[in-house]
Image (tube, rainbow, N blue to C red):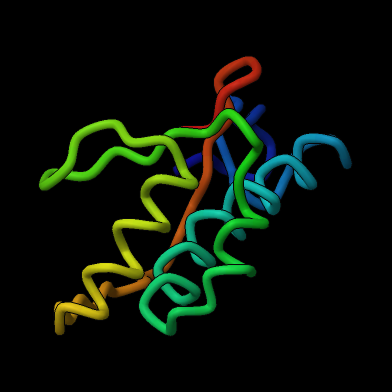
Length: 101
């Protein structure tokens, strides 16, 4: 803790940054929040819209799978009676160059 007269050290804060950084963090956060909601609700058109055409989804049960193949497997799993429910908790995003962490 510093006093009002002391210079405060630069500490990362998720509400600060340039408009571009804030927008980047928001977009990454929406991706993190959107995928479990859309997938679990079988809103697969909205789910698909979250990803670029060359995107891969990595899961513990299937490894790296192209997004379109992943959606196909998800539909087949639902047809087979699979039930998967994810949790979406609070999301904070940090930026490291051109990547979100």
